Image (cartoon, rainbow, N blue to C red):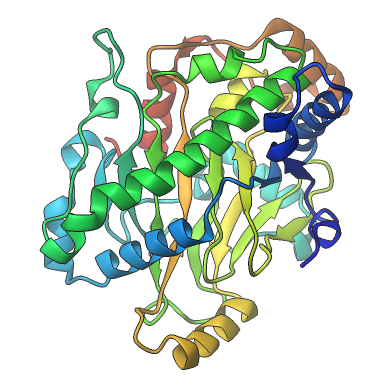
Length: 376
């Protein structure tokens, strides 16, 4: 798929330009403005980054497929419910989509054109997906108020997995972390903030490499919801290419559902805004809604991989990294961005506008975890 075909749905931001030219250059400034505008308009963008390795992504996906192909009793050894599943494994039917019972979110769904709505999550059933969280943050040089959000990593026990686990997770995780922090810098410049403003706010964030796994033997029927309609609670989420399609996102400006398509090859990543970014900008940038479902393209890929990769587990892995602001960072909207947000949202009535209260990032995360049933 050509870049022009990709950009018909989401803007493509070229990190190579940002990394190879002076910040003050017209080309870099244009690319930074494009990044900020994309997040304001769509809540998402595509990134081209020549540093990203296809081989690293493949090695990562292979490892995570092998991990989740293990018996459930082995997986359960890696659960850490006492710290709200913030490291280690979360098994299927644990996490609930917040939107199923969240009134503002239900209003958003109701206001979409019926043909653009997500698959129905009103039953509030937990998602059939599994997940593994691998912490990629720098421990803060101070005592954090939120130790459960900054817990040490869990390494799986099976020898054939554990021996290559840390090196594979760290290698792919750093590729995604580098790219998303560059996008944070570019977006800051595009918003008229100092280049390091957002990146510094996340310097000690509990960043998570969080691959999600869906068993397509067990949950491979068309229109199965693998991850119900939701937004991410962190600042920025970055995805590598999955082997199976099924991710839909919603553009803020149009209410249109966009089926995310990556080219079959190429150094592309998808970035989405999360709730922390929304809070920081006073709603100028909105957290992007998305879902993962089994659609016709998913089923076609399943059949094709049965022929071409018959020895591999039939598991959909999302290659996902959640970039957080630091847990102890004071989360408060930036005044000049709040003013822009109010102008951008003039068509809304006052009672539809979200109030972004001052709070620590760790408190915001805990509030969100309660909504999705990962914290009492």
